[in-house]
Image (tube, rainbow, N blue to C red; front, side, top):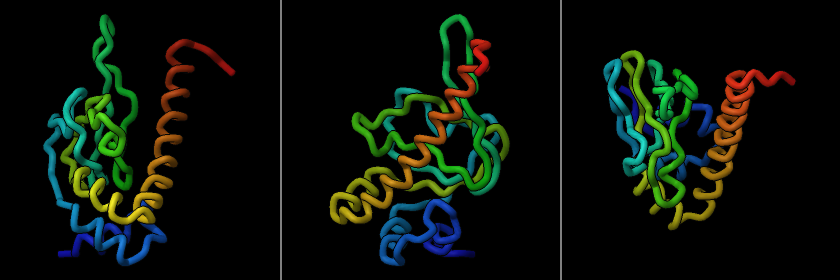
Length: 153
């Protein structure tokens, strides 16, 4: 069985991070498993985890009045999920539901925030990487909105 720091080191999100930072982060990590249909988190709940999908698929969902559940994006192996642990008031803005048996590496958000406060270089490295993910998700959402409203470029 691999150590958590070895698992982190293999994930593209962490490429180029120092061994010290990987050890710090691994101290906040745990493996979790979700059955198909189980929620990793729900909109409005406290956001205290940061997920790395190791196996399976997770649907990011939004409940829209009169429209029901809208799937914003489906994420799979290698994808990163959840940045709300980093931004006050630390609440989830979507639901995340496993659509297949899903194994994740879950990082404790409170632990990460504490480590980032103690080591600003670690905090900066995480912010750069998370900002890139935010940009990708915003772009994917933009494309969905264009498709939903029939606007063609």
